[in-house]
Image (cartoon, rainbow, N blue to C red):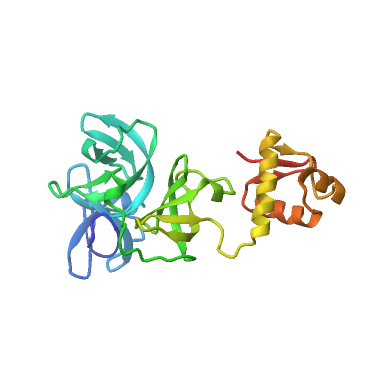
Length: 277
């Protein structure tokens, strides 16, 4: 049985307080009545999250938390008091991030990248914002061109910082961002380069993606930004009109706006193209 993770357990017995579940080693944990359904029977298997409740008792819940043990998640602060910041992680008992585990003083209502770990002294689950302590910069097990899972968490002057495969620190350079993204987004990306310092450069389009379409998309994006986010061009305009405004052929224009539309970067209407901010 793993505390801080979702476990598949078997109903062993029932009591007035709920059902006792056990793992293959016959370790037991209580599933309180609040989470016991009428159709749950002895020997049924059930997936539950195991953690310590507000009285430090190990209990199970059918609620699914936003984060599990040794994972990252982008979470919101509900309260700050003399003990630390308390984070909404989807369970009745909020997750504490002690002041010692904060890289900046956390503010109520704001969102932060959090790592879930166990406090070695209290054996309680706590959160940490000390990202560098929990990512790996050596023995990187991804290579150029690999598809990876991303958790975006911070926009900087260079671009968007991201966690890669829940293990590494990555960066999507601003010049490689061609669609609307924001901190907290979970999406797929591709390794552009693994740097000597162990950080990873990421792109959002699969390697081999047509460079001409990328270039044409950038031309349209630049034109949109120069015109307050709107261009009165559609695929009904003549090739000459498109050529005069953008320097693109009508075929290249249609491919590029199709790409930007799929990426949810633009909105198309009968009047023209609108940049989504």
